[in-house]
Length: 354
Image (tube, rainbow, N blue to C red; front, side, top):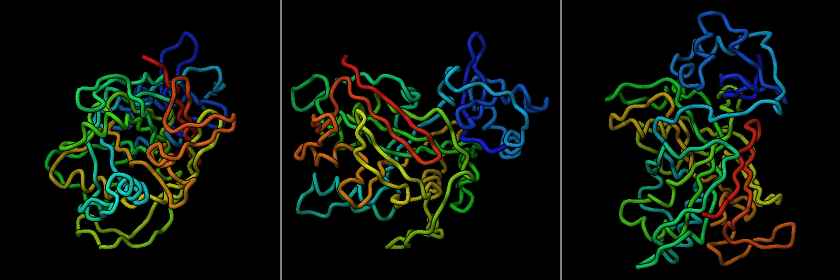
């Protein structure tokens, strides 16, 4: 069975359960599953199926003749219960752009950036499904200043969803890391840039990121995604991060109020998902079923390949023109952002006032 991802749906008057997307339909897998799988697929979350491991994943993919529902006739839910959420900073162009804005005249990259996948630990409880309204967050904007963010931003990312857990104390080898990944979602790491600028030193993002992270409804298996080779990393990473250089080859786009602002590709990620997992676990930290690992903003080298408004407007200095004649530097109330990815569907979010 060829599917466009696994998610959780409910038909009118029926409980949520696992489904698979096929075009404009949702396949009801539990209704056609063998007895050994039925309980996993009748759950209101993908977590039981993900925890059951690759044999169960293959068995779910082999289900035939599942009854179909029209996609427009069902309600879609958060596809899995998020255990932990880590967001990385793995696009060389994004990190370089940010450094040039905030450290002009200096080295745009932090000293460690080319040696390890930089990341921060986010808030699992505020990961929300596509279509959820995003309330403009409040926080401290500077010394003695408090209020709603004036620099609300988006970040175009992938999210890697952990299925098979690891043991506490186990170091997951880079060449086995993808065996733990159930699939991929699109991810929007909403960011309040003024709150972020004031709070980040010395421990990193906190309130600027924790208010909401949006993900797509469908978790797409890794074997459905195209990969390509990439240039070797320079300097060569330490042995625990070393692998043949590769990247997912996925076209991505960022749209605001109907205007496509940027098109880029997941090939622009410098650090791979396997390297992120190897680094996350090298100190013995464990993976859990339902862990979500954000790739970090994906930006390419061109002006229209930048995956955030921070870069597209160059921190507000270069307003962005929309098709309706208006301009933006950061998001206004009522704005709707849509992220799309080849084979991954979309993730939507509309900004609302407090």
